[in-house]
Length: 249
Image (cartoon, rainbow, N blue to C red):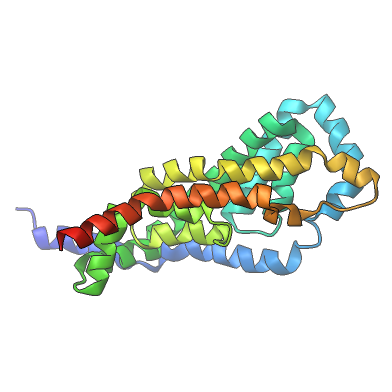
């Protein structure tokens, strides 16, 4: 006769295993180490010093360099290493606007998925379960989040003030659906990816002048304006639902 208590004990033991936190712990550790050790290497200076070698390698081994670029960018995002902006600009420098944007979106999305999975596997699962079992304000907040999940996730992607790592980690900790996270990640990072890639397309001329790319362009009205407009559009369903709720009350 099967002992249901043993079956129930197994999953509880597995959920309490400290190993479930290993993926997220590895990411946090790598992010801290990378912050102090890789900042000088993943920089525009390094790109400028190696530009001729990279361009020659691209011309000789285009598919291989594309794969290597996506792999390196994925590692940078997945482990929250410094240099994500440099990688995005490099995509435009090496592969042009169309392919550079595509490679940037693919690599950044896969890296975001990795962070989400790592957080959801351990800490995120425990926090989501506690929120599900909670009452009062936390329960209402969770219900509101799920009701506006797509809009909130788009806002996290489109608002420039939200760090990319936070937009990857926070959704996993509050129990959002992965399919919604994946959908909003891929679409939500496209506008920013186009801007960074576009800067990279003209990077050769910037280097020829002995300058570094001016990342302050990201805050110019013609750039930040459309991003804020998209953010407002993403927030519109939340506002409409809130107004409807007030009318019903």
